[in-house]
Length: 391
Image (cartoon, rainbow, N blue to C red; front, top):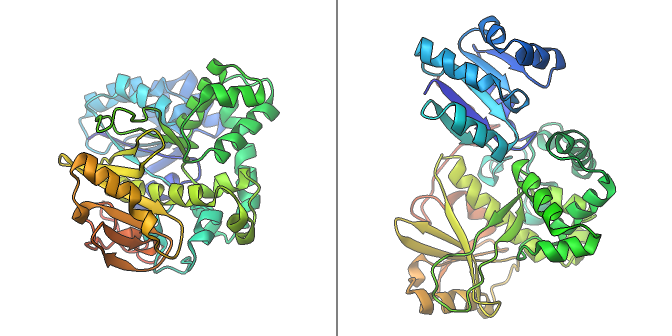
């Protein structure tokens, strides 16, 4: 394709990655006010000055530039002519589909995956450390205090990105909304209830939630659509793209805080779901992912649909396996016909077992989990240990 786009949260490593992969490309960042002004006032002249084989960072600042990029790539007919990055998902995707349809390859880059850290100097032994610290690369690279950095991240996001997307008159109320979202990780989305807690209308909460999704702060997991049970839940669940960010919003600063907190199990569930998603995205594989809940009586935390087959995954933070951990899987197997061989329990321990109800996988084996045939190793070197690119 003539255009390659890498999208993801701020500070997920997009700029570092594309400059490492394409070291000979000319680089420009549209967060630079002068560069942005040039691109807005004279997009054609901006592209001519930049030349072919260029990287344009944070392209969402000048969306009108994409129409001129379309004309340029159609004229030149070069592969890999422009590498673009952006940190506003839905907004950027809409613009790309309108301006560069059929001319662009799109890749998603979330913060570090566990499999990238494993085997590197950054590796940690407890899953609680990863939940608390999160996975933004700069925290690891610079050995920063994660809570301080994430507090600044939240403040910067609210003061800069948010004001570009919507007009928020009361930043304190919006921050309260962020905290409520963090406290509702793994729960069904109820916009009316959230709005009533902070005295904001349903429509406003809906708009704010959409902005959080657009900016890679939160994502929603849809319920599985097939009606194996007439009482099936049809409302999506809420998760954060980074558990460290959620911990900061919840005031969780230490492992002791996390172990005492009511949301520990939900944060572990969020951590596992994110890792499964990263395993797919880092291989450019689309994950058809859902959850399943029969009106609260029985639930499966994650369903992956692969080649028409459903793979149910139950997630438990406990380090000791309990027979009740398999209840949701057994119920779903009976309702759907899913086989125990393709059912999975991911838990807070460190073993892999094959049981009569499901395959059991400890959290540390997530690098082998969720892509291709489960249980088979898909080895990828840690990005900070071995980095080899071919242009």
